[in-house]
Image 1 (cartoon, one colour):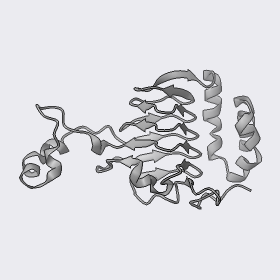
Image 2 (image 1 turned 120 degrees about the vertical axis):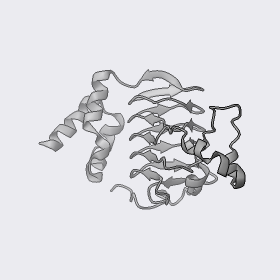
Image 3 (image 1 turned 30 degrees about the horizontal axis):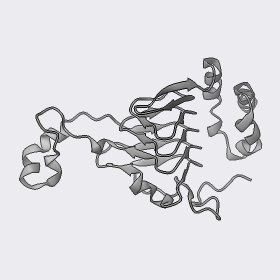
Image 4 (image 1 turned 120 degrees about the horizontal axis):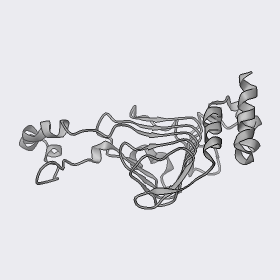
Length: 214
């Protein structure tokens, strides 16, 4: 039997692990089933402590089956300051006359758009993701990385700023996995093949997907 994706604490003896989908309430945060956050101190505060500066319309979209380690932060577009003039000070945020005289400057600033994380992405300890970044399925983000640009599927990145370390699989195998999209299989089918998903080859995953589609 697979764990209940609608429960906040899938491991009753370990409050530090939470499924995020049933926990978040903001319409600006979308999380897929079984994606979890692990934090010994404040796991249930993810929405407020780990998604920062979500003042604008931009969304954080996270796929299914992602593993997010403690301290991972997603900086949203509200963190941006104007850089077109002499000062980067955000006068507008303090309302009153300052806001009246500068609101049009802020509203005219280009947006980097939504931050989008694929499925089956592993975030190491204390990762920082900058606004508007897109992270592909199956990527691994090394501990302490600062992700400033898009990450290709099934690529390991690390450092500040994060740079590709290596692909996890050959191009042909990455395409096999993306086509198979095991994270979209019914939960019962995932449960039946968890061993293959964890330790099998892309060709084996593809074979299961092909049988499923017949």
